[in-house]
Image 1: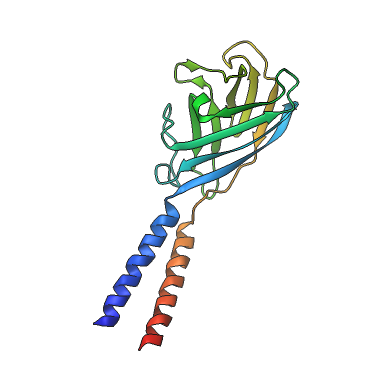
Image 2: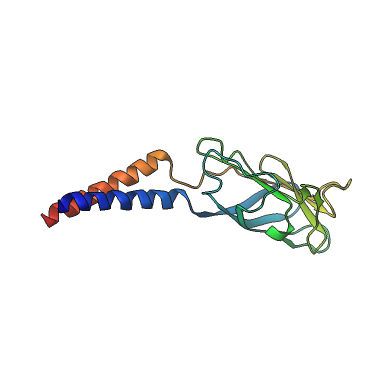
Length: 184
């Protein structure tokens, strides 16, 4: 009877660990490569992958699953030559996790959802293609050409796959079996 109770407890622990591994805030680094203009762009964004699990896409015009966002652009040919964007500057964002093992898109928008925003320095960002972000001086909806365009390399989906979860469960079961064997 005690062995059965321990096995049930072990199974519950394994399920909780697997759930916690699959659903947690995820910090994603933003390291863009410049493809036009001049400057560098780096930062991070955090999203709740229980709201946007593997196989899903963010909801249009809804920033609630985006926990935080920070992007610093420096070396711009305009004044000021450096600027920072935060979640408060955004009108919309896209994270699309419907591609097996990789993101289909990650992008951020200041001209979207009936908004046309700029940050405190008068700059705006706009996703213009998959993983491609343009920096504008002024509003992105204007006739301005972008002063820089950056591309983000496609990243892996930040969660254990079903195979990873199965392997984790098997390891926990094996550890539990060894622990039980020592106790008896």
